[in-house]
Image (cartoon, rainbow over all chains, first blue to last red; front, top):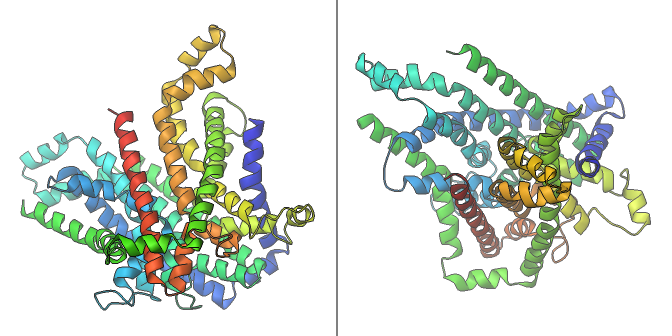
Length: 252
Length: 263
């Protein structure tokens, strides 16, 4: 146990303490000044915007994908199920490059998402694709079909059954998937960096900003935004955890 | 039925646009002129050196995190002590951290002006812009996987067999090595494969600490980025395809382990 504690201190606790010290050691005023520079504010705002859009799209589409994987039968379904693990395993830089190959300047469709918010959102959609699917899928598999059959025998249509019976049972899982995806997307760097380029105030997300500040030898500014990102991620995870348990207790 | 077909079409179209299309295209672009150019691109000295560094990093980080993961999972499931849930939360913390933030935190400890950096440099150890920093960064980001896979399996396993072994005179190490680990080998394998995939694929944390010197402190993922930035698309796609194939193999192994684990 001592070994585990020592190892954990060396690789997690001490580095995070150094980060907190760098960000807050100069006092609250210094920290606040660093996170409210126009460039930092623009980066944080863009991060929240693109993350929210990407995660909400995947919340909806992920639920539909899970439904199709569990309830529909067609050739190639098993392959798609396996492919959905790839965004978890694929190096993020490869994910970014992959998207640019098809939707970048040299892509075959003539669209160019490089250096755009759309491109960044697409990258975040790619890396968070499996979260909602994998959260909803097992719940849907375990869902008892009796309730749906009963509703159908009482004359409810497909849409009504989906909305009134299936969806309420899935809400906690959907929220859990969204929460994890949010936390992941907020900090995403590798998939975004090639697409975002290096355009402050335009396509600079918070992690890209942090990277730039480190390169420009401004550890103070980097650490301050890093602390905001870390706290934001933890608060989100906790909020979604609470929301999820509240919904599963009161939702029915 | 019409609704079902419509939904299937929507889902397949979405996956085609965001996942399958791009993946298929990057493979077809890389192999447009056959295997030859890809092979040439990944056998340049810089590419080989990057691959070697990635493998070296994995050879250190994976065993280190496996041992730590097993120990931590055992502590979390077999002992009661104040602060246990805090320990669990700390192990999971890297999942909530941006890789760039991990890199920054390590620079603040081990960099030239960092807490331990000055001391290390005086003793001739350079961490940042060098291999130890790369290894350390990948260790941090891949820390939680083994523990996270093992904790639920160990909980389910219970302690009866271990207690039986202990009554028969086995010591702690023998019990873990001969009873506990064989019983959780599928979960362990799953955790190790996930750790390996993350170690090989890590980019952000490594990009911050490595210094990114071609042929010296450049891992495979950094090499991909370097080739792309140098407008060497063949080189970038080729290295990316090698990494993607490793990911495909990872996913395949995970499926296999999972199938054998849960018959």
